[in-house]
Image (cartoon, rainbow over all chains, first blue to last red; front, side):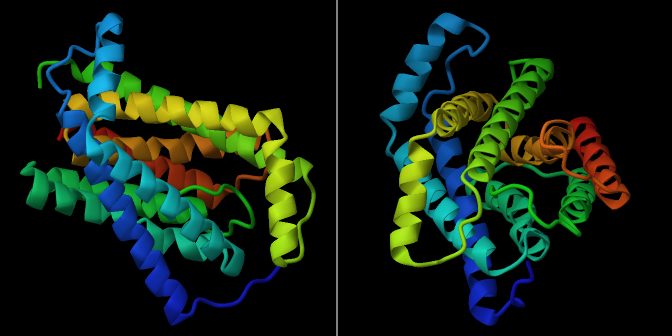
Length: 137
Length: 127
């Protein structure tokens, strides 16, 4: 089951997937923030939490973006190997913290960037030599 | 952060497990449908129709929804960059799940990758 090599178009779609994935996470975070005063350890408040998350338009943007990512990602995987796609897709492990710093004003310490480096290497190693594994970003 | 780190990490473990169950359900369903060779539009539609008739595909959707709900709970309390990094643990669960349940071969390099993710997650947690 040999697949064609990566082309510029596929690479651009992969980068687009990274950006969409980051956008999804940003939207989910925004929708969760609108309900952040709720105590999640208290199970009876979960319905209230979900209600306020669902009334946030960001949740729906996030869902739409997840579905788009899933469709584009599945199409990409029918063209190239997972072991080629994942290293490019895992760029979102850098993009998400950057977005968090710029748009959500979170702080990312140096040690955390080192940690992200380990995760990135790990994700790439896990995807190496993979013939067929999973279909999720 | 008022909510304890312990609870948040526990919830991230839970969302990752739900995600893994969903992936494994989807994978076993697609495997049971057999090879789908042609990219012809009619075959794609037929493939999707056969897929949605399988109860396990719906189970995958249920776990996927559950995973999203827990993820939203996590994000309401934790920083996005923290949660997203720790969530990379689903790669570990999928490696374990594929090897145990799907009998896929997980080689040395892949376990090394898994170890690297574990080190990364521990570092994120203490940072």
